[in-house]
Length: 219
Image (cartoon, rainbow, N blue to C red; front, top):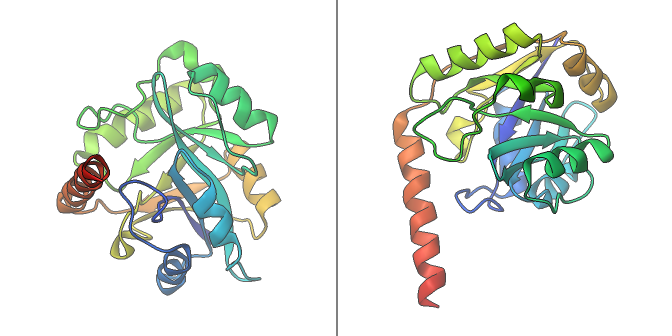
């Protein structure tokens, strides 16, 4: 069985710091078999990290995309998603063979969180049942309840922005290739495990994002 952290960030996220190569190194040290690089609104980090893939370690190119209703993750991407409208983003992801995952739903602390409704279930391929950066476990519990009610696969990810967070959450799957991983996710033949990160990590990224925005305004 292989372990994949399906939610990580590099320096190409406004609140990330890791070089793609550093991210891969941290994941390998944590004993993972692969990661999905899901930078905010770009696949650049994933494409660069893909260069460090090996026969024993896989990199899934993805992106955490801000839509008109909140963030959704596209996995197995090979082109940038240009739309911002919720339904249009989903169409773009699926048009390139990607799958749609809702990250950290019901997390009321994060204003960017997508709040799925019952009627959204038919457009979603999976729900992040464990996000290590959720401050309250109840947010993850609500995600599990929604996914279970609608028969949707449950994924997991560390949402790592710093090296020490990588691998705090991951899925467990009988898959050693990208095609196999995509198939077992869609067929809901995965399990997950993880531990909650320190809330300080979320605070640190918020400060980093604010500092970078101020820096841009001053330039």
